Amino acid sequence: MSAILKLARNDQGEPEIFRSIQGEGPAIGRPRTFVRLSGCNLHCVWCDTAYTWNWVGTPFAHRDNAKFNLSAEMVSLSVKETAARIRALPSEGVVITGGEPLLQTGAVVELIDTLRLDDHRAWVDIETNGSIVPSQELVDRIDFFVVSPKLAHSGNEAALALKDEALRRFAQMTSASFKFVVKDAADVEAVAALAETYAFAKQRIYIMPEGTTSEALLARGPTLIDAVIAHGFNYSDRLHIHLFGQKRGV
Image 1 (cartoon, rainbow, N blue to C red):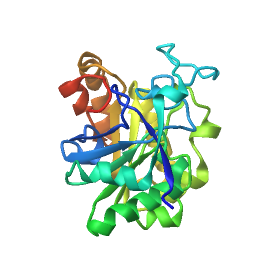
Image 2: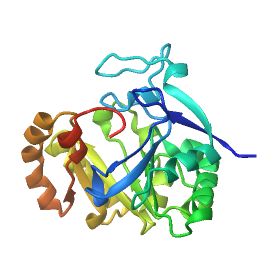
Image 3: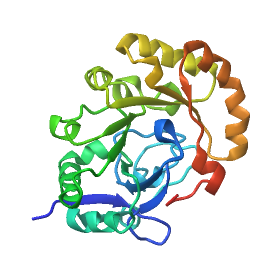
């Protein structure tokens, strides 16, 4: 029996599975098919996919003061059907994102195995907040992890967002890069402190400005770049925001 995945919905109410370019991190600009899962264990006040977790009746804060109806925003789909929809949108690789995909590790593992029944070379990336230790079964199947630990300005307590065991596990993996959302140069210094604590390789760290409009990104970037260069980190824009604006399915 095929496992069940909980997916986010797009603006048309369909599962949010779409082909686009990767807008962030080490694969920026590359064609990818995205699968957005629903549900998250963290609750960032600036999250641009709050419709995956900020349900009506929950106490979580968000700067937009938006709450979403779980039944309207989440759809359950079998692994078999999810894989079929992914195959209908061929690209260089698949990105499993969220929400937080590691909350559904068992079904994600089955999804990857199903995709590779047709193509054993199928490239699969996963985007995670880095607060959950990945299972060995998942590590064995994922080509690349993009790990995005959340800093204090996200509104999450460090005890929830920065899990020592998980971050040390990702730091050991050559298949992992680290993407940090930052607001100012002080946040870049916080990243540098984390990099020293967990021995993150500088060349695998990407600093990305927080913002959901081109204007905000272009204004914030210049305030960060000196600190990024000084520490030897990489800088990541949010290309999809410039191309499409802030919306689902892009």
